Structures are given as C-alpha cells and as structure tokens.
Image 1 (cartoon, one colour):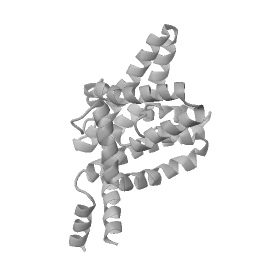
Image 2 (image 1 turned 45 degrees about the horizontal axis):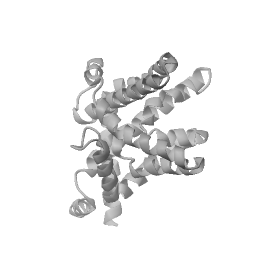
Image 3 (image 1 turned 180 degrees about the vertical axis):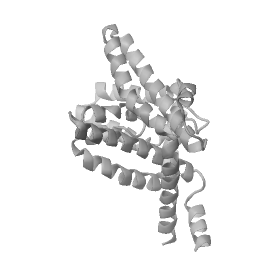
Image 4 (image 1 turned 60 degrees about the horizontal axis):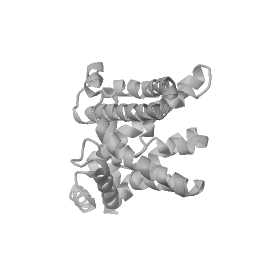
Length: 253
C-alpha cells in the first residue's frame, strides 16, 4: 500500500513539475511545430544529392532533436520563461549527443534489415524503442554519451523501468485514442528514435478546415506535454529509488 501511495505521489509531483513548466515552454512548443516543415524542406532540397543528402538530413534531424531537448530541459530546470533568444542559444546544442545515440541504432537496424525478414526487423525496432526508451531524457543529464549512454539507459530502466513504463502507457493512451491508426508513428515519437521531431506532421496531416487544424495542433501540444512529463518524471526518479519513496510516504503518513 505504501509503495502504491509513493508511486502515485511520484506521478503527481512529476505532473505538477510539467504543468508548471508548460507556460515557460511556449516557445518550445512553437519550435516543435516548426521542426517537421523545416526537415521536410531540407529533405526535398537535398534529395538530388543521394547518399550525401541522406547524411545532411540525418544531421539536421539530430540538430533539431538536440535543440528541442535542450530547450525543454531549460523549461524544466531554469525556472524561467523560454524566449526566442533561449532557442537561439540552444541551436545545435546536443547535436553530437543525439548523433551518438542515433548512429549505433541506425547501424543495428541496417544490419537487421539486411540479414533478417521484415517482421523480425520491426520487432528489433520495437525492442530498441522499449529497452532504450529513456535515452533522450538522459542526453544532457548524463556524463556518458554514445554507446555508453545507451548502456546506461538500459541499466537505468532495469532499476526504474516499472515506474517509467506504467507512466508512459498512461500518458500515451489519450494520444492513441485520438489517432489509433497511427500507433507506430505515435509510439515512435518517444524514445531513442527521436520521432518527436516529426510531431508537426500530426497538424499537417489532419485534413482541411478549422476543426481539423485545431485537432492537429492539439495533438502536437499533447506530444509536447508528454515530453515535458517524461523529463519531469526522469528528474523525479533520479531523486531516489523505491525504498526512499516508500520511506518518504511512511514519514508523510
């Protein structure tokens, strides 16, 4: 009973932290909306370059993901409103860290695609997304990088995975109910694939008309809110293990 109470308090406190950061992170939400059209333009512009164009797109994906993660962390950590100047200061920040995470995963998936049948590749991709789910939140908050960060993410989830995965399932349900046909893309937005850079596609693919656009923008805002909650939960989980939370719950009773 104490463990349930402590876990509920953990989620409550993380949700409060995320809610308090929501107003400060308004420009981060605007940034999230703009990432997809920017990346789509880069992809079209570099498509004639072949493999070189692919590397440019990959680098820009990493740069966009790193900039958004840095801005999100500022909103959670700095206790100050994020401005355009804050985003400018975060440009290219964490780009190398995101590449250090994304490149090993890309190599594994490329080998899997070459050696394994399609359904197995999908399972490998799903396993990577689950077993390394916390990798984006560790960027900038961990002394490790690259493969070592992925290893740390795996071992971190062995310790705190129950609390992490239960929360992820709970916060993803609203998004999946709104877009059940987009299960794969929705789940891929969170975790080591850094799919949140494509969140703007939810707004652009919602159809025409005011209602459709409003619904699409609400979905992007929901992705942003989930990212804020994930960051806040990661911080809270770093403040002590289950025994510490149970002890605090006992002392508070």
